[in-house]
Each structure stands twice: as C-alpha cells, then as structure tokens.
Amino acid sequence: MRLLNKKLLEKLKRKNKGNLSLVRAIDKLIKDFEDNDWENQADLKISRADADKVHSDSFYFFNINIHRTMILIEFQDNEATVVWAGTHQEYETTFKNNRNTIKRWLRSNDWI
Image 1 (cartoon, rainbow, N blue to C red):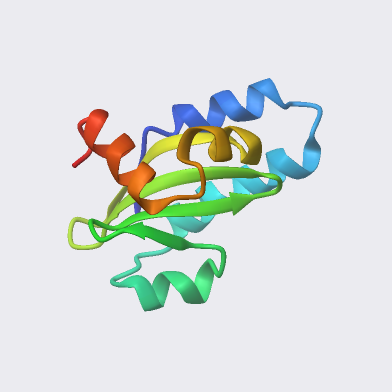
Image 2 (cartoon, rainbow, N blue to C red):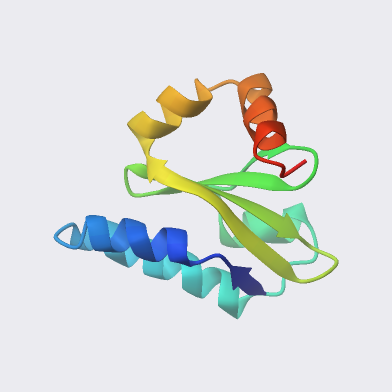
C-alpha cells in the first residue's frame, strides 16, 4: 500500500528524536503500510489491532506509542494518506474523543 503525506510522521519523529520507542513505532507503522496490500478493514485489523475506524469514509486512528495518527485508507486504490498526527493530549484537545468532533474537523479541513 502506498502511504502518502508521510511528512507529518517524519516531522513527529524529528520533534521527538530522543524518544526511540516512538521513532520505532512510527517506522513500524510506515513499514506496515508499505508492506501490506489490505483489501478491507478485517485485513487491516489483523496486522494493526490498534486501528480504530472513526468515520465511514475509511478514516482510522492508530496508536503509536503515546501518540495518535489519523490516516485515510482507500482500499480500492491501495493508497493511504496521513491526515493528522500528534500526541494523545493533542488528540484529546483537538478531537475531544468524539466522533462528531472528528467529523466536523474532517469537513472543515476539506477531507470529506
């Protein structure tokens, strides 16, 4: 699967270069995407149990160490795009652990 907009994950790695467990977790997430050709959510969940579908248009949050990242997965086109990445605290501040807030954020940022 092709992972687009990896620069958000690379930026997160640079900001936290001393946090080796986070850097390894980000590298593993990138590798998981690049090494797999998931065709549906069930296939994804086998490889990445931390995948949490947050919108019906195939937006998922992934836990990476103490951070979270939101990724849009287009199973038919075999592509995924990193939409947002940050700490869990930033996630709670931005999205308030609420699917309606996530939906509003996606709409206001022209993702849906």
